[in-house]
Image (cartoon, rainbow over all chains, first blue to last red; front, top):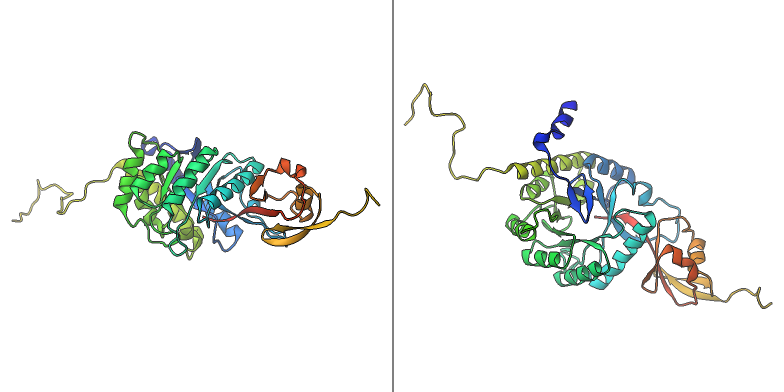
Length: 284
Length: 75
């Protein structure tokens, strides 16, 4: 354990932290809080994942049993940057309304991220793919209203660039549909998104949001140059969520290091790792 | 029986369901009576967020649509 800690803190593998909307995050994983069997399991998974930024949803309070458990009883709002989403909104109007309610909740909590919103404007209940027109409209309105907008979008590079130009603090392209576990379906689109969004602005944060199924999906997104990955179901619905949370933590770090290290090019033919000179046998 | 007469009961819609309210009661009092004092909630009155410090100044006349929300798990 001590050796591992020494390695991860060595200057040889140093990395700048992820900064989104002026807030510094120590982890590059953003983890959702939905779908866990219990709040205790959720809390343990968040802990093991190493994340310091978690998403939450805004929903009607129960009018009976109002004294029941609240997620905030299990989530330290001073430890985690809370990122309220607009999940379930299918129009810009609805998303703006839900964003404002999330902001009111965060302001009451004295949260450092009280102006943050994970904007989702969905187009279709079957795919949960984003509605690009509604997403653009809501981004513009929320930015004008002072929000720090982290926006869920498709992997379309043109839409991604437009969202950034409207003032989104982070563009978050989907790897594949929400909860589908299909990973990064179009790495080439993601590459182009990253190129466009970071052109002349290399620290602009791009977070791959949605579609992660397992650790290699996170590693791939990070290897391609994403600044972070947002995931929920892949941990919450794994057979062993706590173990998967650890896998995601390590995959995120491995992928980031590989990106910084710079991979070798792919070649069709082999190149020997051992020298030809000095062999005691001959071939060909 | 003028000042002390019981307030007229009106109906408001809370989280989609009709509920009785005393006409003229403050939103702060109404929310507290539902058991939400000290709970992490946000309140919307007819589509407009009412920050917690402003709840006391808003009076119910009947017919309002009120949403009371909190955070739940989500991705």
